[in-house]
Image (tube, rainbow, N blue to C red; front, side):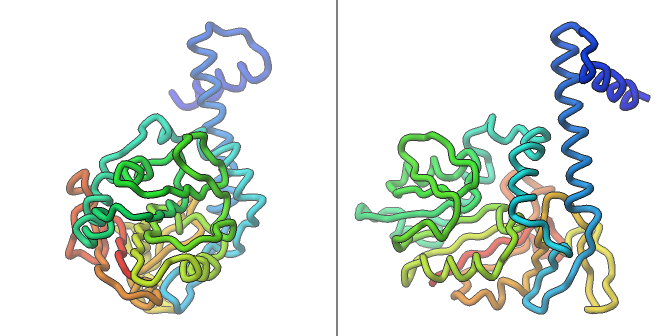
Length: 269
């Protein structure tokens, strides 16, 4: 009943009914949220899942880049408030893990470059900058922090990088093979790669008789659903592949359970 009332007020506001400013703002927010959900259902949840022997599923058919750009620019941020927090607990945890994996890279006073793929507002990029890295944020919607460089795609980068960082961004792309190819092109020999993605076999997965294993439920706005098999044959030298749980703690501790929240990969080129 409460949702119906909100919907009625939002529609009334959309059609010009004058409302007190506070109620009008809430009605506008709820209207934006409804439109975002409708677009997500049409663009993602109406699709099926297709398995690839490389260890992942994709939604089928895959949305076009134009469709995805439209969704993110008009709907995605209507349902999220990520930009209000510059650095999250997860960002700190990731940088600490990288410090443990290769302290020499972080302590080096020489030139070093990190690419934050799907950087959004910045997140871990602020921590990388504090550690002396030149930071290149790759995101379709560049920010305006003066000490970051911005690119809209990996193909726009023409220099070797020491660290490739992608936190919960590979599940939003349209061509994972192209992304892996770009990582191979950019990462210098000995460079580090850090990737974290949702685990396709997390709680709520269903049994897929075609491949004899569980398969994920479609979750907007994910286009890819990864398993540990993908990272086991990723093409780089794995330092660590973990199943991690955020439900047990804010840091995302390693979990022995194969059906925990996320997959975390640390490797070297």
